[in-house]
Amino acid sequence: MSTAAGVEARLPIRSDMDLVWVRQHVRQAAARLGFGLVDQTKLVTAASELARNTLVHGGGGLMEASHVTTGGVDGLRLAFSDSGPGIPDLDRALSDGYTSGGGLGMGLGGARRLVHDFEVESVPESGTTVRVTSWVARPPRRREDV
Ligand SMILES: Nc1ncnc2c1ncn2[C@@H]1O[C@H](COP(=O)(O)OP(=O)(O)OP(=O)(O)O)[C@@H](O)[C@H]1O
Ligand SMILES: [Mg+2]
Image 1 (cartoon, rainbow, N blue to C red):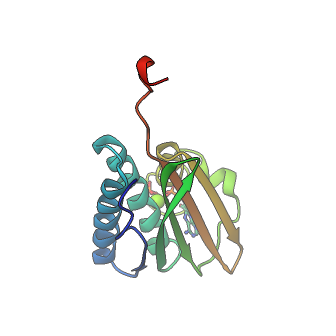
Image 2 (image 1 turned 120 degrees about the vertical axis):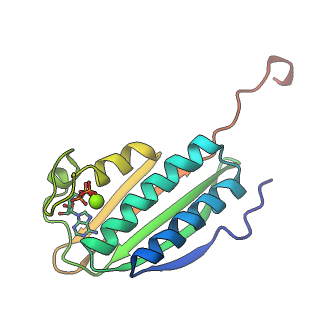
């Protein structure tokens, strides 16, 4: 059983300093749920890009972190939401190199590749929610355990 206490959180994303708290929380929550160091870093990197998009493109918002389980496997779900302009063309936004600002245009597509599940809900003029989930990898069962 994992220790899920301290995983659930709602953190504001209003300033660069808030991005630091987001990264710190995701690192700690992932460690608590049993993610290895490499997988923690993947989640932190994805969260960092998505939180930065919430701040820069969405005009600020929040991240909600939750502990999810399926078939006895623990996962970490992160939802980034804002009430900004929305993403008019999601396919274009996800393609590498597309940016509406002065970025590299790698954040959204890069984040998608770093997590197991990725979904975007975006309504023009109303806002965007990006939900990502990753599951703790279990070591393969040894023959004598089967
Ligand atoms: N929360 C959001 N609200 C509105 N538009 C968004 C949001 N997130 C992403 N976008 C749009 O999707 C585009 C692609 O996002 P992506 O993170 O890939 O690139 P970027 O933020 O422009 O550059 P960077 O490589 O620095 O992240 C953005 O330029 C922006 O137009
Ligand atoms: Mg970005």
